[in-house]
Image 1 (cartoon, one colour):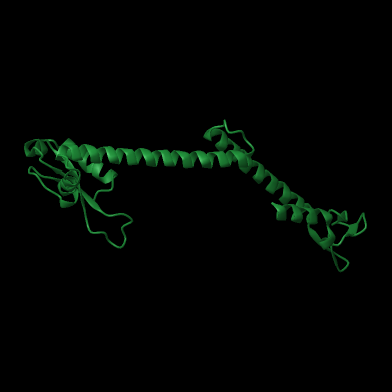
Image 2 (image 1 turned 90 degrees about the horizontal axis):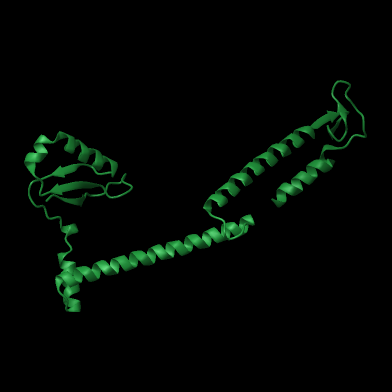
Length: 203
């Protein structure tokens, strides 16, 4: 029965992860020759997982990096168990470590979720969809507020009037007649812009 192995290649300076070749040994060469569709499948699979190539051979290839015999023999000698018992023990330990990692990640995720719900002012029974919807709503609200502030700033723009820079809106400036319907307000004294600056400085 064919086996599937990974053969790591020397890592180059431009590699973001170690390159590797997909090795399929103990393969029935006769079926390999007549099954082009199967060859195409494995080539496509290799490309999908990032392999540099796929190697088919009809004999057994032992890749030292994949050989766990020495490790298992050492584990068996240390515990006085058989190889089979060592395999089961190692497998059980790895599964326990994986379960511990999963539980740790779950606790960390739950903590992040609780912190987000508190920051959003939402109760702890809400789910991630509620958090996502709230974030979308906050972003929309922020964009709308930003657009409103820009409209106000454009309304309270500076204009030159008789050698003085005044606020257009606060002074009721008439561009056509170059007059003000109210007492001229210096641009730096515009109360609206000051309030906006204070508000945006706080946020």
